[in-house]
Length: 144
Image (cartoon, rainbow, N blue to C red; front, side):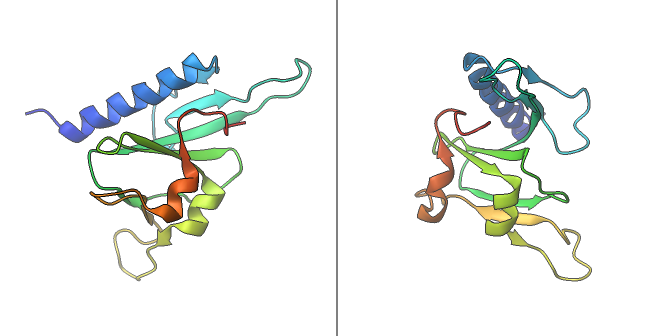
C-alpha cells in the first residue's frame, strides 16, 4: 500500500527545489537526511569576490490543517531554515530556525517522547493564522 505522507513529502520537496532552481539558485541535496537538512542552497552572490555560505533547508509538508508537531531543532542558527507547505492552502512559510524556536511551542514535560521538540500551528482547516502570515512566501527572495 502506498504511503501517502511519503508521496506528499517527496512532491513538496521537489516543488520547493524546482522553485529554487527557477530562481537560479545553486541547490545541493545531501545523500542522507539524518541531520534535519533536506537541501543546501548557496547564498546568492551580489559580488563575485564575496564569500558565500550554505543555507540549510528543512522542508515539512501537510495535506491539510497546519499543525506541524514533533519538530527537532537542537541547534538554531542564522543559516538554518524551515520551509513549511500546506497543500490544502497551497501556501509556503519560510521561517529561520532562530525565529522558529521563538514562536513555536516546545515540549517540556519530563518523560515525554517528544521532549525538546517543537510544535507550530500555521493554519487551521479553515484559514491561515494571522500570527504567522508574515512568514508566508511565494518565492525565496527572503533567503540570503
